[in-house]
Amino acid sequence: MVKIAFNAALAHKGKESPAALKDPELAGAPVSIDGSTGRCLLTLLGIAFILSGLIVGGACLYRYFTPKRLYHGSMQFNDRFPAGGEGQPYYLPQVEEKMEISDDMAVISVPPPRFRPGDPAYILHDFNRKLTAYLDLTLRTCFVIPLNTSVVLPPQDLIDLFSQLMSGSYRSYLVQEDLVVTERIDDIKPLGFYIRRLCDGKETYRMQRRDSIQGGGIVKRSTEDCFTINHFENKFVTETRICKT
Ligand SMILES: *[C@@H]1O[C@H](CO)[C@@H](O)[C@H](O)[C@H]1NC(C)=O
Image 1: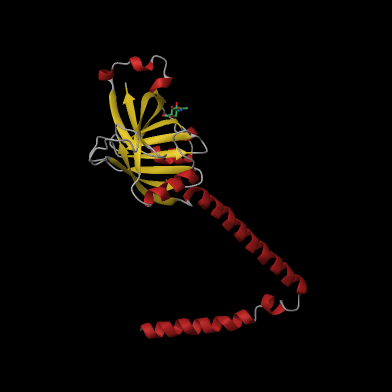
Image 2: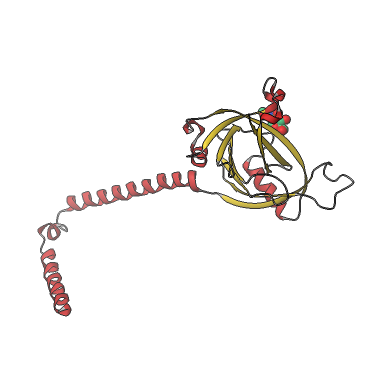
């Protein structure tokens, strides 16, 4: 049964091709020069259209999905003494992180620290919008603050830093940063594509440096809910302490 059906299909196809040869349009093609020129132009136009589509599409993909390079590094740091000072303790704490760097942003993945308090987090620096977002993975909450360019190295310098980290253990020092939550952000669209993608569906808050708030240091510590994230995007480790009042 199957064989017969197959043969029948073949026979049907065989009948079709001679019919196509007798197509008056196809038969007339070699004669009519105008027609073939028109078709040629149309084909070229089609190819140009497809190519321009590929170029525009490629540019969009490049903008959003590439060329992200992934780096991995760790930094040992000295809690109390400046780097290289005397009286080194036997054990030095260390911060590990992965960083994805592209032309206009960097995303840092901070794992839970092993021997120190601290939350795992994603930290995103948007160099075009000049914003930094911390996504605390314990609280599942986003915190946004203007990018501090004197702390965060630009992309090319970050790449250089990670290549230095790869060539051996790097000894550094700790800088503390004290941030205070100021208000909730209901509409995260103005924060740009990258932060929107990171903070989508999470509560998002705006922050300020404590020393930039007038009379900011006066809040009673006991009424605050604080947590820390340890990370680096320069030659030193930053301990970011975020407090909600
Ligand atoms: C950037 O960070 C440094 C070091 O923590 C601090 O001294 C400075 O005030 C910060 N700048 C801004 C604009 O917040």
